[in-house]
Amino acid sequence: MYIHIGGETAVAKREIVGIMDMENTSTSRVTRDFLRKMEEEGKVITTSPDLPKSFVVTGEYVYITPVTAQTLEKRWKAWPAERKE
Image 1 (cartoon, helix red, strand yellow):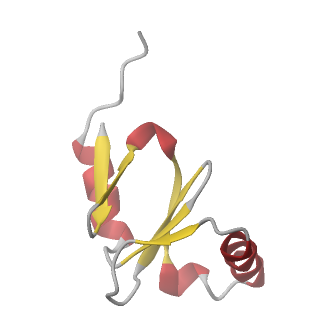
Image 2 (image 1 turned 90 degrees about the horizontal axis):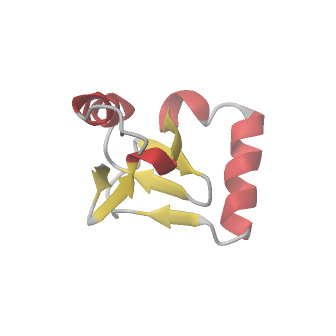
């Protein structure tokens, strides 16, 4: 299953490590350092020019998105868990 995270971007649910609220988490020095490091490595993708409200962490990239963390959480919960076959 894929979750639409903003703009024209969708990410496979199994790849998502975390969904973070930009306002609440960016006050932490550790989070700012993490985002800066990912930016330096070219691993930050902005999904839209609109005001960022959250970011989605995958195993490889960080996606900055104007979609709220609450909305992304609802989209996450709307899809049942993926089956292991």
